[in-house]
Length: 306
Image 1 (cartoon, one colour):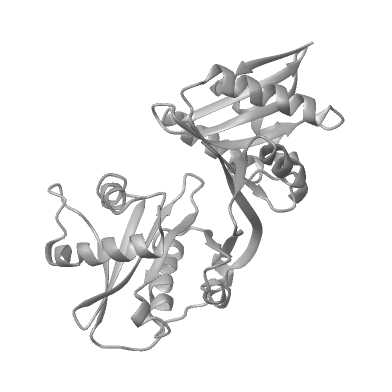
Image 2: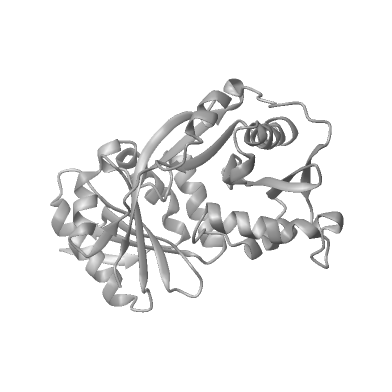
């Protein structure tokens, strides 16, 4: 007879060992939790340290046979689901259904549920669609650039162009950059409707969490674009947002921002990898590939309907 219980930090090694070989196969990949044991283990520890992790474990006797759950907000109202991950040769649908029902029954405060699966993971995609999850109408591509593949693209040489590494003081001031905050806010929200980091959160993070970086590009005293990135718990670079004002595109500005961020990650921070995600509707994929990024996987997100 199977049993289900909540995971704790003592389970992390076993969870990472269990998930990693499953998540290494595109047809089984759940993409919120990372790929590879080290990456998954790092995600577990990071979210646990912030009290933003809820995982359920299914056992047959003392043998781990299933995992579901994910990273959450705090207090517990939203979850970004990992899995379900089921041991090979088990009844996948039966185990998945039992764990999912246990999750939604025992944690009624969760009112938002999101999944992000590899497009080849048809089994999980169908499972969630049958439980009233609606998939997005676009795919998301994750790219990876290794330090040895980085190609510096400087763009046009403009003497009156400045790229500022925005640093806030304790009063949340950016000295001469304060005048560009409104422009940044407008561009961020037009380029990324309903972003996972608001403009307010971006400024909060660069002030309080030093691994986050915001670069603003100013040309002829006018705000042109920005890049927001960070160093992940796995000690990798990550580009969260890169945007250029519509009328200023195709002038090399995006290349200059991206090169600035990558030089920071690879040269100043001495990291080995940088990641980013981009949607089908974003034509920046060509830029990323020219800079040395290669496609890691393609996924599709889905959210449970209210």
